[in-house]
Image (cartoon, rainbow, N blue to C red; front, side, top):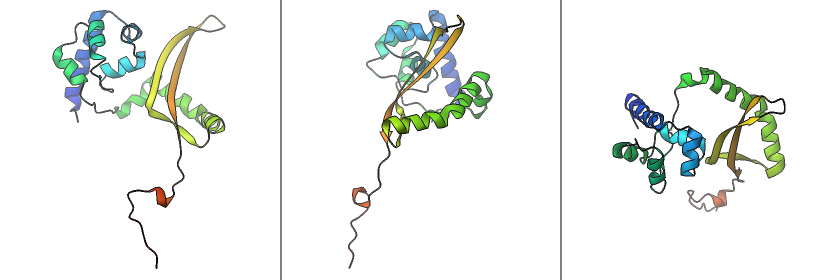
Length: 166
């Protein structure tokens, strides 16, 4: 687990490399073939940089040093500070999911069956569009693999020894 102050120092260095490039997350995403949210996750040490993606990210962000790239390629400690929920943009995202969550769940069940959306096999992006009224709108896309719930038959549970009844 990365110590929080050490992690914060790494994140500051990563964000400084982005700032030095003068590029947005979306511009880095376009140059690397990643989503803009995943680029942000990488630079916040919430995702692991894969070896085949490292050259494209280094080309996009030339200020990334060898030690930063090496750190980014290590599995991160994925977490968040509990106070982050008070940040207005995050609070509103949470509020939207809570408000619409029950309806979204019902539609998932109706369209797919009894199951959930994965947050592991998952893509996320943020886009800016113009609404019908001409005002800017935020589009947040969650694209997760569907995972059906399993019926829990004891015969399928490989960790349990076979029990003989007499």
